[in-house]
Image (tube, rainbow, N blue to C red; front, top):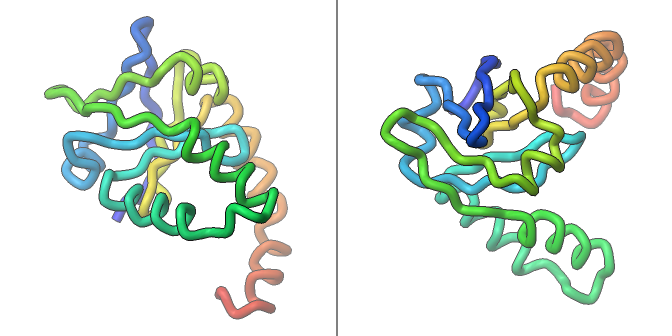
Length: 144
């Protein structure tokens, strides 16, 4: 399971290290794709296969489905994890998420999210300010 929050730096060659605790779980190849809320998602190839299969089996007759498939699948890139546990983040994905300098590397169970550190801190602050109401809404639908 991928959990926890770490801060790493993206270097001038667009390389980013995974936290040591994530490396074994992530494997030698990962899939990086545009995420939601201005972050990038990173999946193991096994988890990516499950997601891609679900998306492939969705109806191409619905505009929302087509658009989301293009967004997630069209922007996805398979990247190698090097011997030092680093990945190379393609420029178009780095720019899309606004990654520069410090990057928050966040484990979210089956995926890792990559956030510009400043964006992540602002997002966290907003979520923390609304945590009680979020919990209450999730409780009404049986999540908590």
